Amino acid sequence: MQPDRDLLAPLLYGSILGMILHTAGAIVAGSWGALWMAESITGTSRFGVAQSLFSLVSANDLRWALGKAILSGCVVALIAWESGSTRKESAAAVERGTTTAITVATLAVLLLHLGLTQLQLLSGP
Image 1 (cartoon, helix red, strand yellow):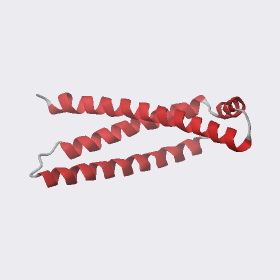
Image 2: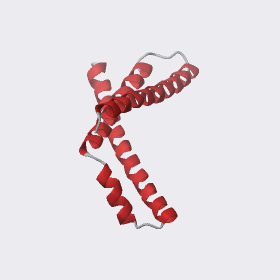
Image 3: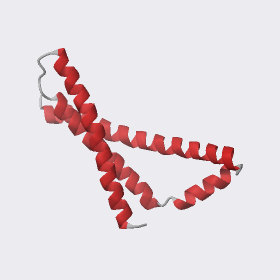
């Protein structure tokens, strides 16, 4: 058994796919929420708001979102691999390792998104 090939590859692929699906779901849910709130508060039609919203979103924005999702999946997979690949002495050590991996992965993804968003804003439309 080769741990790198047999364990890391499925974790990496699953994390990347999961992040892409999670990002797509968040975009759709956020868009629906914005449409509903705009209709509720301003009284405009959903179609008018959607047309305005989608006229502002470019293919470049979608490429950045996909890139962020893929890199986030890689970061989460590598942090989970690093945390889970060492032998733990007790259940408490497993608990600490899991909590640390979740916390570090969350902070790493937030920092990654901060950096990539800054790059996106500097690169222009």
